[in-house]
Picture (spheres, rainbow, N blue to C red):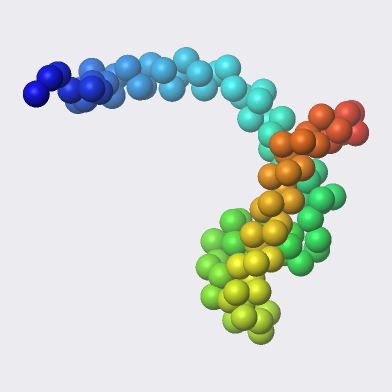
Length: 105
C-alpha cells in the first residue's frame, strides 16, 4: 500500500487550527451579511406558518413531532412546511440576495 492520502494526527490538527484562524478574520463581514440576509428573508420571503415552524425547529430545537403535537397537526405537515420554507429561503438567498442588500441600505 502507498502512503496515506491525507495527513493525520497533530500536524494535521495544527495545520487546520492555523487555517481556521487565518480565514476566520476574513469572513466576518461575509458572515454578518449572510445573517442580515437570512433575517430579512425570514421576515419577507416565507409565510408566517413557515417562519413559526422554522424558528421552533432551528432556534428552539424542537423536533417535528413536538411541533406537530403543539399545533395539533400531523408530523408530515410540519415536515412539508419546514421543507417548503427552507426551499424558499434557499432560493431567496441564492438568487435574491443582491435585491435584499440593496433594500437594506
